[in-house]
Length: 178
Figure 1 (cartoon, one colour):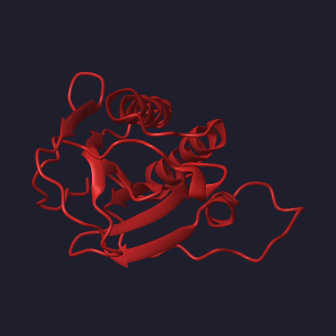
Figure 2 (figure 1 turned 135 degrees about the horizontal axis):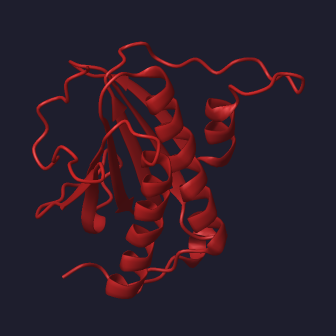
């Protein structure tokens, strides 16, 4: 079994595999944008239901940002966020032993999806091959995300994808968190 890195705010999943922890403080992202509201951090156990649970948590997170902060989230952004969460969590479950950590936050005009797993091997996108069955997850994420970063951690790795919230990124509206 892999071990979770010592990250504050994460809780090991029990009774159903998921425990969400809303964080009380937020910091500006690397681009200086201050996140809306609280990020959602979730530890997912390695059972077969964690992928569907992660998609549901992502949809609920975006709905909460809309309701609590008046933030516009396009249907396309909702769909792509669930797709990216599904692909990244699936890869973590398939290739890494132990728990998976999912972190969602709104930063500027994007939703940031970060997934940590215990496998230190960094993923590599394969050359496009329409005849290949499976192993297209990273290609899909790269195609739909505004950016994708992969970082080795002291234990495992963290993959972060950013997805535009609006079909027209200039149309982002909402009030900042209080």
